[in-house]
Image 1: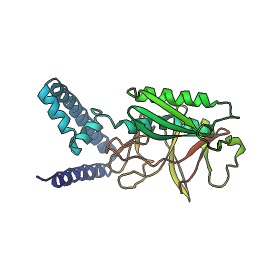
Image 2: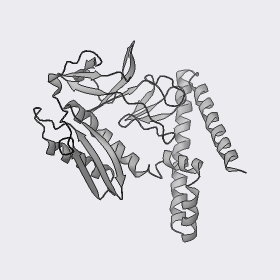
Image 3: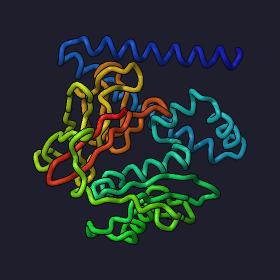
Image 4: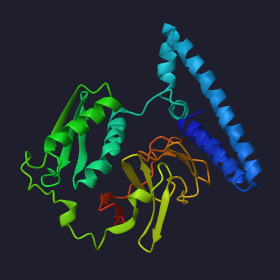
Length: 283
């Protein structure tokens, strides 16, 4: 069988899963809950068996080589990734780590940009020095470095550059000095947000979900990356959102799709100011 044929078969099987999950969504609530419980139980059994299989193969030199070769198959890699047996590539995990602190940095009028990852060294750039807002540039440096080290421990060095050191114009302006009218929209009051509960904001120029996890606030376009259907009515368990249409799962802290590697929810710029959460429609 040719590689193209195997990929076509893999995609066909994935569509069958989508169709089955779509059919489940049309059942009454009791039947839906029973079907989803069956799905979760099968996945848990599958993960348990896969972990035991992988451990046995890793303990055998020949099996280890076969395992490493097998992970190159897209279907096997996707299965292992869903069950947490393999990790995303290092750049993806660094990006996800930065997404953890981005809303906090945004709330002080700054931003962080991943430049590259090279030989286990991360190069990032800070936009804005936070002068005038009570947070020093060094504090931001420390925050970024600590977050990356916690989430990607194999990183050996982190090079943090700010706009001033790179010859920029020091573009940071405290948010209180900016007129938030125009393209920024006041969405809701931060104090009214329940931890882990997505809130939908739907106006002519934006349809987004906003969610808070402790001090982190994230916002995403209200659209599944699979079929572009709204996700605001999806089931949330912990920080995992399940699309109500086809069952795709997303990490609400990072936007990453746990069902299909490489997919993610589109982020929406978000800021905290004056006790309110502000979002900006993507152009």
